[in-house]
Length: 334
Length: 305
Ligand SMILES: Nc1ncnc2c1ncn2[C@@H]1O[C@H](COP(=O)(O)OP(=O)(O)O)[C@@H](O)[C@H]1O
Ligand code: SF4
Ligand SMILES: [Mg+2]
Image 1 (cartoon, chains in turn brown, red):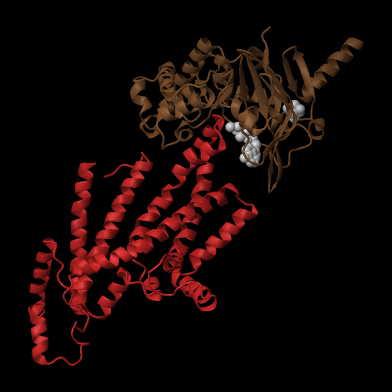
Image 2 (cartoon, chains in turn green, yellow):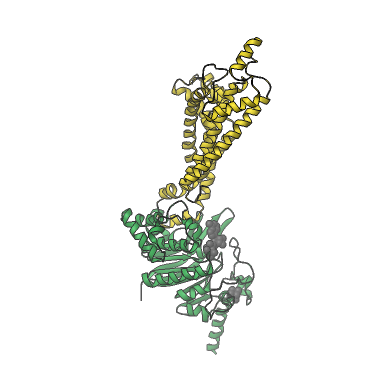
């Protein structure tokens, strides 16, 4: 068994805004083993990015981990100071963001922006860092790397810029790479290329990856485990097979239904499930999915469902499962 | 780049020619003349004078002569300050104005930029509120009010600072403060808002995700982007301040270009009016060119065309 690299236990993240406390992430737990790829799926606003940022201590001002523990590679992240976190960011864990068009600083060259992170975390000289940057650009499939080093972000296409972001993320050979919807902002053909690149790199480098997306096609081809999030909670967790062939939560089922054809491996975006997402300022007492759930029962509105384990590595929070278990249990009793 | 410069220079020449023509026409449309104020000149003297300066010729001929001389770099002699060339007078005045104005701009930039940054970094806290309050007042109070108030406090009441002339460093304090007051406030406001905008940009989040220290995020990634609006503002500000704020020069009796310009207008000193206007126009054009190039140097996305 490989080592646990990331252990999130009952993590809660809140944003303290003038309008009140936004419980963006509410009591989530999961583990990531070394070398594994974990997918986080959920619609916009479900807390995927906040989860990712909390792992790096990157939360925007006003955001705080208010409960639980985040253990990464021997560090208790949620108890570290900003200064300590700086040694880890970009070094042991790095992140790629959604929009490559705005993620690079427009006034510095590509080379400068790659070298910067290398110089920050190693004792390489500027010249050595440049050589490494050139290597990295070739690694992420950018042609004429020497020339690109001297170019500015606006001279590169979106796909190229995302490759540069990946190069920056890989520069210090992190243990964990977080990709926060890395292809959402790109054209379909470019999306496929970037995913292929990430798949390649995963094989080559063997680091752990957290792949955040709302494209189930992406997680199917890359991940071992999938976390399904809804309104700041994990509603279902399981292996790719569990989620695709044996979904338990009504939200997961809805997600799968909204992909027209899964079998022909088309990368289709999810069609949102009917109804509107939860108001995070005033979350409901019961199951957050209740207002949109076709199988909603009375108890769903009153109380939050506990997790039910379907197998060792597959669990879900839905009252229907509790009911099944209860009925199953009573059946045995007779 | 060379092509761009040639284009800009050609454009500048056309602009200056237009300015010269317009000024010339307006000047001759306004009633009065350079010698009317002089104590009842005899008809003979008047004619002699007009002949000397070519004012007896038809206006269109005067215009032609002026332009021909201008092309040769000759702006003529001052009509009022006899024996001195216009170029010489402008140069003398500009030296004074540029020194006071230059110091004022240095002060405005080196106080305004940090102030704006400090406010942005402390957004919503008391320090920010204080800076915003001061800079809002700053842009609402005109320079001559500042000058007058300073004069009342430091010269009249406390008797600390001299009120006119520029013979020691003490003389510079009040004029520089009056000139720098508005731009300092304006720059700090500009800087604050652009800094706030920059800090919310995705590339700042990227910088943070790289584990860069605070100072590097601020000085390397934020400042260079945030300073761009200030650079844009610097163009007109430089031209305006370097040539001397008329009012401030009047208040503190500074023998600068602003003062010279005003007297030339009231005295209908035709050659001086033309000379100063053309000089001001050229300076504005030059400053804008410099600012455009500086902008390009700071922001590689800008294409000069
Ligand atoms: N800076 C912030 N200030 C206040 N609330 C925030 C902030 N960032 C995120 N949130 C809240 O956290 C919730 C989850 O956001 P996010 O993790 O970005 O969703 P996504 O799953 O689309 O990545 C949002 O509904 C939002 O209300
Ligand atoms: S707990 Fe109830 S409302 Fe929530 S998903 Fe299950 S059935 Fe639907
Ligand atoms: Mg997101």
